[in-house]
Length: 221
Image (cartoon, rainbow, N blue to C red):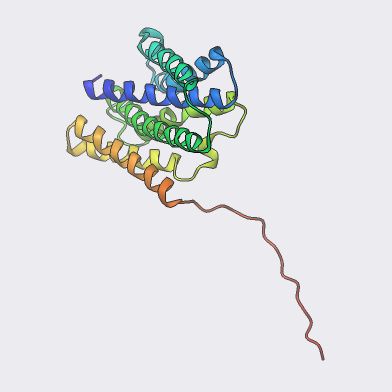
């Protein structure tokens, strides 16, 4: 894999491990639980990606870098959390940090998932890279939320999976016309901008609601 892939893989692992650790702390888990959640979020999506791409054993099992980064992130977050005074303002900043890290991880892993497919199976131009980008981006978060006993973020947050899909398509299109590094940064930037705009402007997809029948009133004579 290229140095660009390695940069995004490392950045995504740290960002998602941070979000996993923060979720564990919000659920009042001990340091072991926080670390498990950080590891599963940081490397879970990448392991699913590698298996689906036919790259076995998964890279997380062949190299300890992702595992060690996730553990180090979990321990750093756990130690630093003790020095944060609990107040309305600090809760707001913690929520912002969580949103930033989750968005950054989503963008980075969308790129690594798409690039993994394009490197391993260059004959697959769009479907496989986009799907692997999506699975890599949301896989760790789904594991995190299920272990924390809550509805996965991807199922309740608008313009989340959609941002990853658009980012994956952007990587595939740019891959055919530009260098791999340029395609990576274009896809990363698009996912980042879409998620940031969705959070700032409260963009929402259509939410189905149960229908209702208006009572027909008979006009009085």
